[in-house]
Image (tube, rainbow, N blue to C red; front, side, top):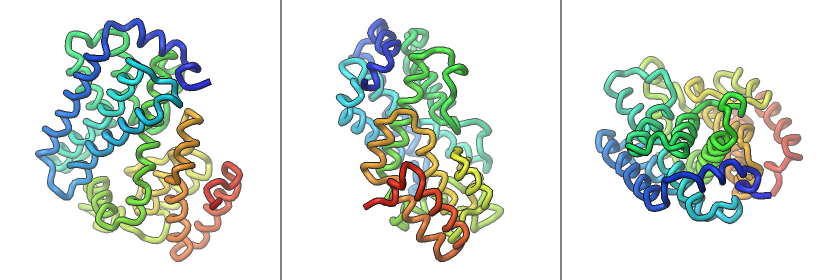
Length: 299
């Protein structure tokens, strides 16, 4: 069974909605304008100035590419394209506020992204489908996927899981840039850790080790990692690799592994740790040899 066949409640929700495909396309175009408008206020060295609009564009392309695999047709496809396009507008707002005030907003960027979407929905914001899309965007930036019991609705929970999974799958498509493009690396460090680097200029730099080492303990327990806690670039990449633990749909995990993203990240980490932290290298290698039958170490 494909994704939509496994989630008949979602299919029913989308079919019953008064929101038509044409309106969804209008919503998608309007949300792209949000990225363009707010990017003007970001400096050229920001990873998000062009990176987020590129990311959501790639995500929308992925949704269309794999639509048949997931069973997405017609309005269903338009719903998911809107979601992957809308999910990261809050990233730009968070960075603008951070650069202006020198402090991070104390809530996930999904909150602002969902508010932008709700504004674009306008008079239709109380339509059950719009409410489900709002919640999917709101929860996409949670550290871990919320449980069905916490959401209370199967259709909404399915949308949350799918959006989070496509976000990760598209993110893994940039794995080589994350581990080998020095300019890209520096933008990631400067953008993600700008607040921490004011008091510690080395925060987020490559250090040849997972710093703090407790993050490796958390990873080996199969849990998600908190990005803001990563004091070395290697820890940031371990956080990136840990996404595999939270992917909810088997199709997404299979595609991500087949396309090589997680393997690129693991290879980078093993090379870095082999030179700088051999004990950490040994522990991570032991995990890689057993996780999914060592698939990330295969040729």
